[in-house]
Length: 135
Image 1 (spheres, one colour):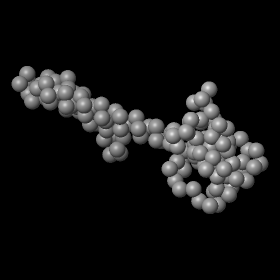
Image 2 (image 1 turned 90 degrees about the horizontal axis):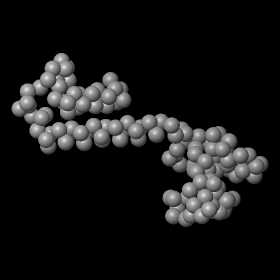
Image 3 (image 1 turned 90 degrees about the vertical axis):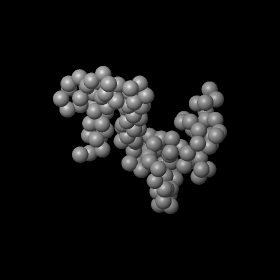
Image 4 (image 1 turned 45 degrees about the horizontal axis):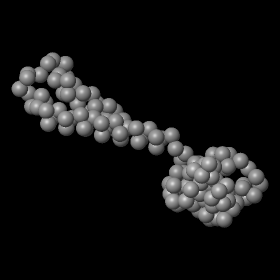
């Protein structure tokens, strides 16, 4: 069973229990069943929210380019310099490198090829305002 399926199954089981139903049969549980205690029910609601947050994070992560978070190699940085010097659009450079536009601009800034006020993306990791933040 994949992790996604595990989360879906766990969420379905918890939702059934939260509603006072047996997850397998769908039959109503007795009023004195432990799942009907308020603290147990609140805990299950918290667990459902946590599962939903994990799923949302995984979905966002799956939509990121393949090289997000990877260390830049010397060769990749040289390629970036060449592409930027050739006036290739940053979006195209980002696509070629499997990185975000934000990462490309941050690397160009680090290499001294782009100033903070030339960036089109936020520079929140560096603590400096970007052009967009200052507009």
